[in-house]
Image (cartoon, rainbow, N blue to C red; front, side):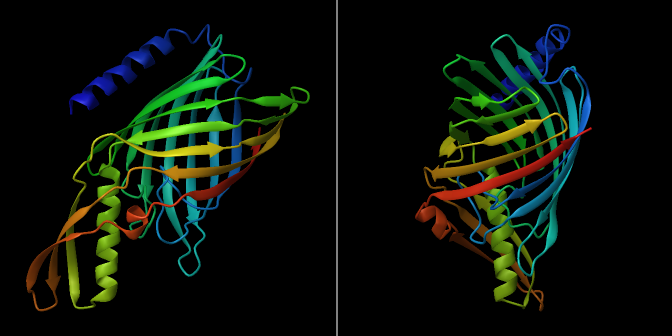
Length: 301
């Protein structure tokens, strides 16, 4: 709770400071515009973690970007899973981008609505607030971001990253490629919620006599933990009215997440019983690297 208070205070002060720099700051554009895009993600990997089944997303997004740096967007993710095609989540985002000399950053807020059938690792997350800041040293860019994530409990997450952008072509028809290395840290309450969903679904499939399942999952060491290292290679073409981006990512998970779940079962005959099990999945006991990619096509108007 103390961490949450400190971070919330940090975000609030950052926002006030940034608000004072509207006149001096500049965003990536000299004019306001709408942006419509379609995004394809090959697998929903989060901090190096993924469900046992591959979960690809097709996500249309619409957003408005004001020349001051303020923006808002809305998206809907379609889970393109065989025999389980569904809308997996809606997301609303708002924030403020800024750039001051060699510094650039973002203050943002998000609200997410996940389908009850979702198998995504992030499916217990209801939204969050965050900020990031980067500095361009010319030979490389170094950045840090931090978020308060609202799920069944409240997570604190942050990452550090280094990157170097290579750009070529005229300003209105520019190509860029940006090798990036990232380390992701987070507390682990999001994983408790995800495990509750997974356990409940599995039990109902195995035992049709179960009419209700109430699970409580605990991660014994739920503090902020290094979860993965990621290497990505964003490739982008940005023209005046449209663009395309492709980002392959290689994730190396770290520090397995152990879970213990206490489950209360109610049967059709109204009988109830409670069992406590170690529910650490095989994917956590034997951490494996992940490779996934994201492709985005967008239009500005």
